Length: 467
Image (cartoon, rainbow, N blue to C red; front, top):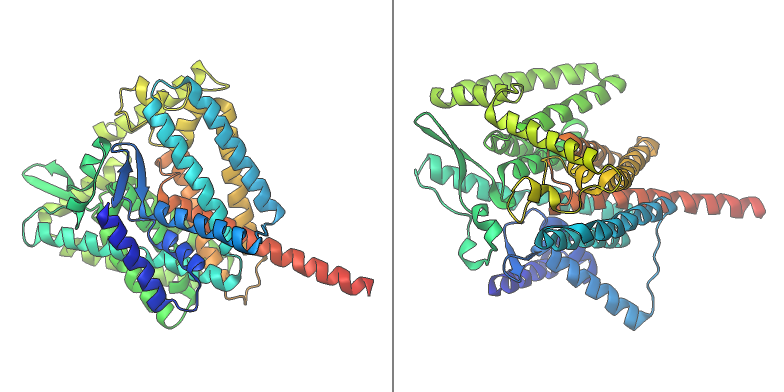
């Protein structure tokens, strides 16, 4: 616990030194965002139970600051647009339903833990839009999220260097100071595959799992692409540098679901550019990407080239053990849904019936798991919440003036949210990961800022017409 106290103090001191123009509450919000990928650095209360990550520590501090503001100033004005209130309402209904759904659980450990995660996600979805309520604050928040990839990136590079150059497997830095629960024992080691005489190391950095880290890297790259395509100066070149390094790390996750998600993100941007009549840009960057991938592939040692090809083609081969396992697990979710279509089999019971670990209950796709455990009611509540968020975010982007400096930020977050939605429908189960919650919170902030701005314009027009 001392490690958390010391690190938290250092984060706050950094805020006072480098972010003097922001007050403490605003700096806490940026810390919530920046620390979201540091998932393996956490403290279990009690050991093996609730995970106290840095993001949740700063969240509690932000809520405490909000409470102090209310007690001292008696001022706690909630300026939220009606669409945001609708999203809050749907989320609250979903959370209350999960509580009822958890009453028939056969795994109370998982059920209580999952309810805590959903509750903390709801607090983040409320607190971040409350503070991030202007365009300038929103830009800073997005930059904080993009900057959050730096610590995981450095740790990922360090561990790969130690393995492939020094020939030594190392755990994540400072892991000896952290108290993990029994379900977290594999989060600090080195994941990998045996392939013939080779051991293929998979980078997972601070997210505890290669697929989770791979998905996060795809989101980072997707949010950086608009700056690479349309910006000049430091945003373009810093974005390009980070995207290239993150892309190399993404390859080394050997996460097929993340690779597929990257392909989908590229296709979305290609369609967008064609619609914007920028076909030459598509051709130019496609050629650059193809040449770069080809060069990097042939620079890769021959013994790893074969595995890269095998790993890529396995994604489309339903006869491989890994792919068959994923298909069968998703199929079980459909079977359980059919057995109890309205209310599902109960929170956490999917894992019980498939003999998964006590800390796991997953079909590898969140909405399919929800269909099995929460039935049609839980599935529709969650689907409506996510669909409304995606629709509202894209609508905000489309209605933003083309000359607005906010437009590129909204393009990146719209594409990222779309990928996030697709991923949790069918590809992988990451809906309530800390980084995923931040993506949703940034989208809610964008919807809220646009709604308040639109309401102000409407009131201004009405005022002038009355005069």
